[in-house]
Amino acid sequence: MNEKIVNLFLQFWNQWLKYRYGDPVFRFARLLVISGITLMTPGGLWWLVVALEIRPKFLPASLTLSIGPETVTYAGIVLSGAGVLLGIWGVRRVRKARSSCLVYLRGMPGMHDQPPTKDLSPKYRYGEVTHLDLDTHNQNPEKALKHIEMIGQMFDEKILSMNLEAPYIVFAGLAPVPLLYAAGVRLSTRQNQRVMDYNRFEQKWHMLDELDDGERVTITYPQRLIGADIAFVLPFTINIAESQIPASLKDKIVWVRLDNAGPRTDAISSDEKLKSILRTVHDAIRNLRSRQGYEHVEKVHLFIGAQASTVFKLGTEYQPNAYPEICVYHFQGGEGRYTWGISISDGQFRILSMYQIKSIF
Image (cartoon, rainbow, N blue to C red; front, side):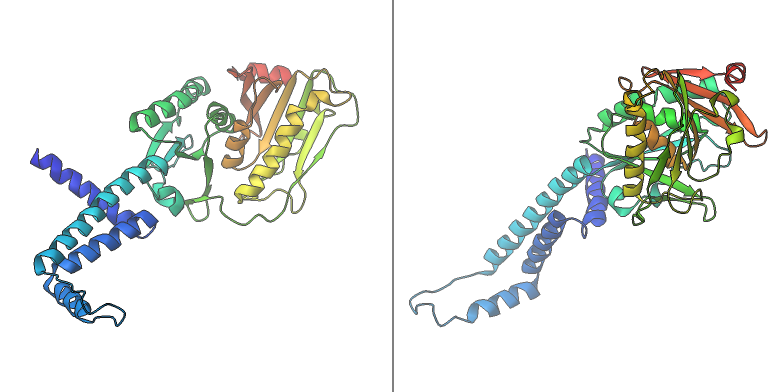
C-alpha cells in the first residue's frame, strides 16, 4: 500500500513538473501551493503580521483584527491542500483531453526501432503520449497488407484501454505507396489526425508546421471520352514520365501538378496546404462520374510520387460509397517499373500481383 502511494505521488510530481508552466490550471495550482508554503514558514508569518499591523485609514477604530500564528498556519495548509487537489484534477484532465497517439509504421530498411516521440511538436507532447507500432519491413505485400488491415482495430483497442477522450493521432511512417494509402483508408474515420515526414538530409522527423506558401494544384483532364478506366498521376516530389504509364492508359490520364515550382523534395510542408490540395484531389475523384463523358468510369489507377504524409492523408480521403475502384501501384526504382499494387473496392483490399499488373500495363 505504501509503495502504491509513493508511486502515485511520484507520478503526480512528474506530471506537475511537465505541465506547471503550460497550463493555466497548473499555474494557478502552483500559485496556491507556493502561497500556502510561504504562510507556513516563519518568514511568511512575519510578513503577514507586518501587513496586518498597517491599518488602512478607512477602517473604523472600533474594528480589531486578531490573527494568531496558528490561524496563518491553517490558512497555509488550506491553500497548499487546495493547490495539490487542483493539480491532481488538472493532471487527470490534461491526460484524458489532450493526449496523443503516435502511429509509427516501419516499412523501409534502416528505420529506427523507437517511434519519433521527441520530434513531436510541443502541442502533441502536452499530455499523455502513447504510441502504436506496426512493422511491415521484410514482409511480402500479402502479409504486410494483413497487418495494415488490423491497424484501425489495434488503434481503437489501444485508446479504449487507456480511457482517453478524442486523442490526437499523429502518423509517422515510411513504406511502399500502396501500404501508406491503405493505412490512411483504415484510419480514415478517426478525428484529430496529424502527420509527420522524414527529412533524409537531417535524418529526423518533422511536423508539417511551415507556413502555407499558397501553392495549389492544377488538374488537366484528357481531351476525349473515357471508358471504364482512367489514371490519376500526382508528381509532387518526383517527376512521373508519361512513358511509365501503361500504354492502355496514356490517353486517359488526369494530370494533377503543383502549379508553381513543380516536383521537389518536401514540396508540401504545410498542414493547411496539404489539406487544400487533397480536398481538390478528393473532389475530383469523388465527382468524376458526374463529368460529361466520364459516366462509365469504374476504375481509377493512382500513380503517386509524393511524400509519405501526402500518400497517407490521401488514403484518409477515401469514401467507399462514392469512389470507383481504386488501384494504387508500387514503383520499384531498381527495376524502373511498377511491380505490384493494391486494389480497393467498397473498402475491401486486394493485392495486385506482378501477373495482374502485366495484364494492365
